[in-house]
Length: 207
Image (cartoon, rainbow, N blue to C red; front, side):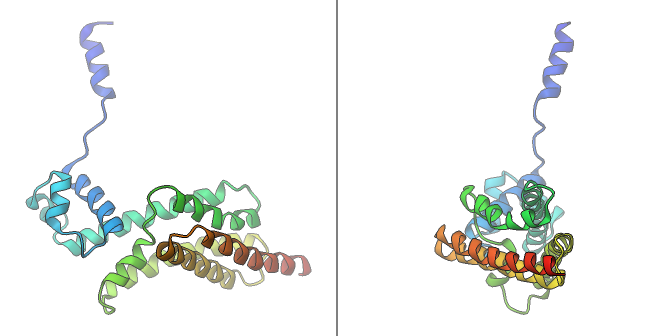
């Protein structure tokens, strides 16, 4: 192999540097989720990302628009990771639903647990920030739809109701973990989940 070809192969193997706008989004996502939206100023984001205000405003236009982009990416990534963890429990839909609390436990113990980005954002803003509530509601609708599908496969007589029960369990567990930092919250959540699913299993057998 010639030196020129070898150099080209090595160059192609090098990681592609993230664009300034990607760095801005990544940094904003970490800081908004970890430290809070109001506590994180634009100058701090730009300094950490090594980017200019011109780049930020040309790509995003405002801090609110940047927050929209952060929530969109955070929600998509969270749902993908969460449901991949349920899928990993196997083909049995009840086993998938029983993996809800272990999935939350993995997140809590993974070193980057900052609570729900949507609940945090809504709590930090005025209650009439309609666009934020709409984004949070859209996130919930996607979770509910997937949970209802699994609940239907599990033989639930009321899959939409079961999905809402499970979402309340998920949100409550996340909030309790965020406030207390106490892992025993997961033990209580697991008991509550077992009670809900044992009832569902009994109903499906009786049908």
